[in-house]
Length: 115
Image (cartoon, rainbow, N blue to C red; front, side):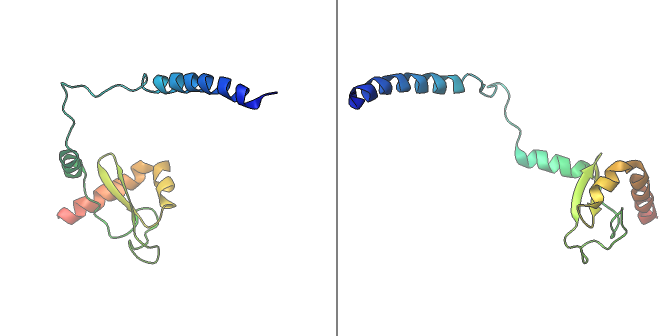
């Protein structure tokens, strides 16, 4: 059996398969709409930051631990336009199990800070 002859027949077939596969890749992507300009990331970030209410406490809303204490840097999270800070990542699921209770505490603390 002449392996070189077999190899020479295989290369053109492989080239065709590769060309078809690569041509199919571009069919799924669509170019961005020309009439809609992309939003500036700076503007979007600024607008988002302006809408978020700051976290009024110096402690974790779930555990009561001091933020930035022994647990390290606080975990920051935004829930319904309210910034939330946790002492650790383990407090976030606890918050999400009953967010209304914790949001009530945050709103009370924010109201107390205004007075």
